[in-house]
Length: 115
Image (cartoon, rainbow, N blue to C red):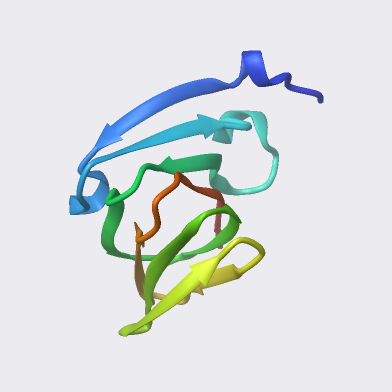
């Protein structure tokens, strides 16, 4: 299946998981379009200062791939700076958060897979 950019659903979430500002999601595919047990497959766009609050992933794994910009990720209780090309895996009940710490939009590919 090929899904053109103009066919992908857009969504804006304010204070996502208790984080500051707004996050824009561009859903590459919705869960019902994917055979594998997937909860999210999307691009996340976080403007400067915006973030996703701390949350856990019990019964699922989430992968973040930083496409553009820079940010701060809290993963396993440690805060780490991330930039384009970095990849983060959170699962097995662990928690994480992410915030744009740069001056341009932080663009992240996010995939959540259930087990």
